[in-house]
Image (cartoon, rainbow, N blue to C red; front, side, top):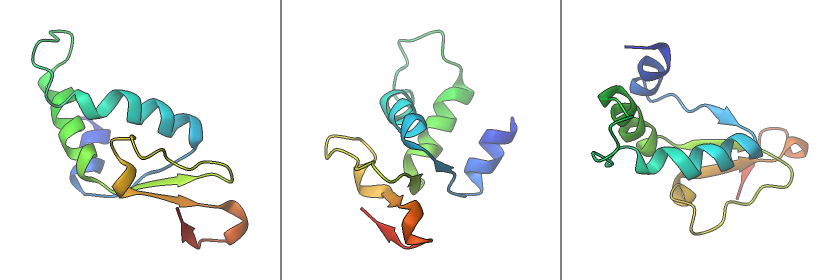
Amino acid sequence: MDLRTRHRRARAPSPTGTVEDDGFSSYWPGIADDPANRALSEDHRELSRIYNQLPKVVVSDSRTPPPENPWYDITTVLRRGEQGAAGR
């Protein structure tokens, strides 16, 4: 098991920026239940299942996740100017 999977199993949120959040949220949610894609390993599917359950933290002064984002309800946006105060 790789380091990312161990980290996710520990349920530790990983802060990301806007670009990472856009990329991750457009790719990883669907991996868990995509058995038709033979390019994906069971490790990828497990990582997706775990990551789909974790709270997301996006550090951005401009990001507001759109409601259609699969992780919308579990994403918190931290504005750099708010010094740790969370807001969506």
